[in-house]
Image (cartoon, rainbow, N blue to C red):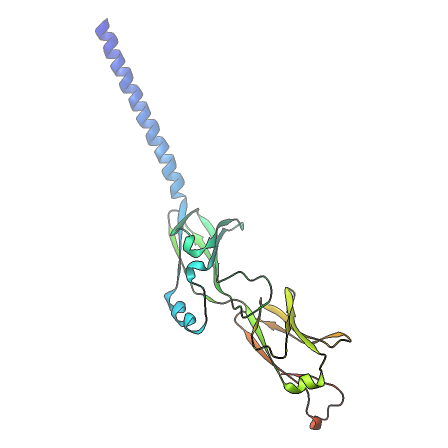
Length: 230
């Protein structure tokens, strides 16, 4: 009987080991299935823009660019410096938005061109999507060239350039470009008695508009105080 008990014990142990191995195999199979439902996103910068653009403008290092990866519902998977981001993002299959900006830009500012890119990608199950960022200027700008005669004709005049995000005072000696988000931008003048809009334009991404501010010549036939914007 002792031998029978011993053999039964060995058989029972072997059965338990077999069941344990089966459970482990099933568990690993479930994990593998979940991993196969995911895909990978790899983000990198194109080599073509960096050398050309950097030669003309002072830009931050691409590692300092702000990278945002979000899913189709707008939930952010990552938001932070490009240099601190992982080499790949493991995400469930679906659509994703990959955006990058050279800096944050929430309000009009002088000498602040913003470069970036936006890419919408579809990540398949078990696949890898490589996202090549071709950075271009994403905001717009406006530059005023004010004739000295304008200052003589309107000594109390103050010029502003503005949008729905805010406005900037543009002094007569200002040489810098004022940058705005794409959209409606207005040239406004205040002369102490009131405020008037001289011009409104819609600016696109990468567009820089130059306006010449002047007063008509005496022989132009225009009477009274007048302003020309061209």
